[in-house]
Length: 389
Image 1 (cartoon, rainbow, N blue to C red):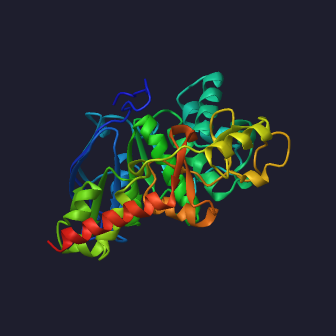
Image 2: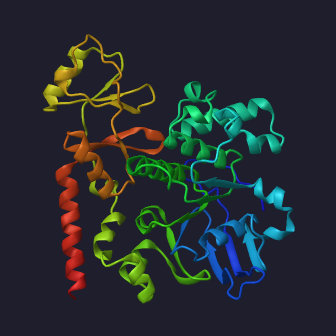
């Protein structure tokens, strides 16, 4: 399996994964934990494994990096049989992210991220550069977080470090087992958006286990719905799974609100954004206020030196001579966030809109409440027409 390196933003750096008749049979059990599983995950896509407890989704995931050895069958990664390499060598070329980040408490953030690169023999300068690059990628300032210990981080920050560690050696494949299950809903949404933004740039092959069908719909290029024994109930795009469930099991698992769930397929950049007056830290407040008033705006989005939103104050709040960074950054959403996510943010920020960011957290624009609700209403009406023939 050859390692790949991103040469430009958006280029595919992942590897195809192919499972052929993969089975896991534990001694003393009549029914296989995973029975004759066959599927292909295209390079550069996110495949979400979802299903009821005990269906074999985590077992299937762990067989890819041989944390669990298959009883029979073949797993090909990048066209190469995974059994032709030692298990340790294989795992060093596959990122692995689990719930809570699973950081070593006695190691700093930087040392946690550096684990696999050190095992691969990278020199110190290369490791430091890669560590800082990844912390920046997961929206953690390297100068602030590099030397902290896990106990000094919030749950969401620990999970970000876990993602950075999974990407440290630039693996073509990243496995994720309930990566966002231990954080609160708002942090969960932010982490999902960040991962989607990272994936747009890096295009790894990501296999993610979740119990949440809504997360699967939002995150997945493809969704694998498993029944007991890892029997494939359906494996397809979210649109097909929602619009044409393969059988009664899938219908029941997706739920009766599948038409409403299709709203999760609509993304913010399909609605479009509008320009908002922006200001850089250190600019003259008077000049910014004059510019905003001329544009008919009552607030401004404050950006840092890297064009990332760090504040969204009302004009009446700009009292000093210079624009300063707000105490709390706005709850920005990625442009590939769902309309449901956009509404969640809008309902708590009081602006009647949401700041939208692009890859790397750079400012992209503002989406307003009316545009989002109009789009959702149109989709709902269309879904209703389809369901009624």
